[in-house]
Image (cartoon, rainbow, N blue to C red; front, side, top):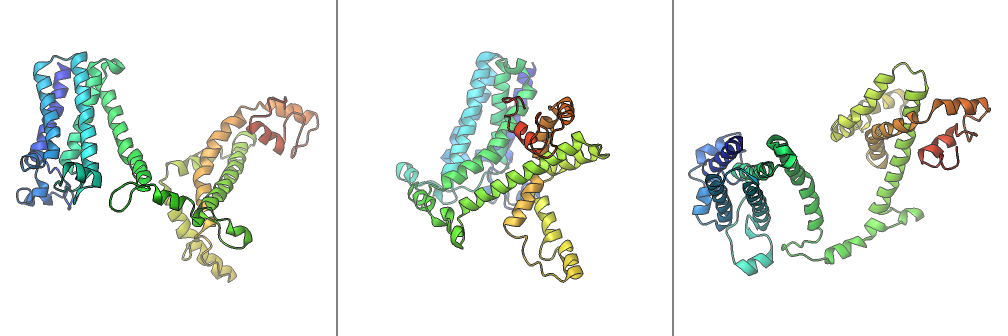
Length: 371
C-alpha cells in the first residue's frame, strides 16, 4: 500500500541518518565532505546511534521514538489509529530535539537550574546533518499520520509540504524572535531575571526628548518619527502613482505597474546597497554633483535621511497596490458629475472630487456623509 511505502521510505531515511550521518555540525560544512576523513577519529562527527552508545543519554529518547515508529509500522495496519500514533511520535520527536538543543550547550547545561536538578552533562556542539534529517523525518511522520487520519482527503504530499513550510517558518522566523525576547530576560550565567529589562526600559537613550531643547532624542522617538515620515510619504506617492495609472492617459501604465512591484521581489539589502553606491560618500552621483557644482555633500545619506529614502523605495509599491484598488473602486461618473457642478479640482468639492475629497474617501468617511 502507498501508506506503508512512504512510511518505509522515511523510516529508512531515519535509520540512515542515525548510522551514517554526523549528528553534530561539521566545521568545514557537510557538502565539502572534508568531514569524511575524520568521521571515525573525531567523536563530534559520530552518527547519532554511536553518540547515544558512547554515553550521551539525551539521545536515548530519540532512538526510543524511532524504534516505536518501526514497531508501529510492523504491527499496525494503515488507519486512523496508526495515524494518531504516528502524529504523536513525530510531535514528541520534534519537541525533544527542541528541548535538547536549547538545554545543552558546548559547556554543558545552558541554565543553572537544570544543572542543579540533573547534575553535570557532557556538552554538545550545534546539531548537524543527522539531527536535521531526523527532525525532518519526525515532521513527515506528523504529516503522514494526519493523512492516514483523513486530513485534506488523505493527500500526504500536500500535508507534507504544509508541515515542512510550517517547520521552516518556525525555525527561521519565530525562533529568532522568541530568542531575541527571551535574551532580554537572561543574564550572562543563563539565569532569568527582569532586572535588566526594568533597567533598560527606562533608559534615557530610549525615551529622552532632549531634541526639543537642542539635544538628541531617544531611539523610541526617532523610530516613531521615522515611521510617521515613511507612512506619510509612501501614502502620498502611492496615491500619486495610483491616480496616474487609473485617471490619466499615461502611455506606460504597464511599465509603471512593473516598476512598482519590482522593489517587493527585490531583496531588501539591494535597495540599501544601490543607495550607498549612488549617493554615498564615494557614490557615483555624489562625485558627479561635487565635480559639477563644487558642493561638498559629506555623509548626509548615513542617517535618518538615508533610512527614510530606503524605506520610501521599499514601501511605496505596497502603498500603491493597496490604493490602486481604492481608486479603481470610485466610479468615474461621480467625478464627471462633480465637474459638471463646477467643483474645485484641488480642494473640497460637492461630490468629493479634489485633494481633500480623495483623502476623505481613502480614510473611509466619504460614504457616511454622501461625499
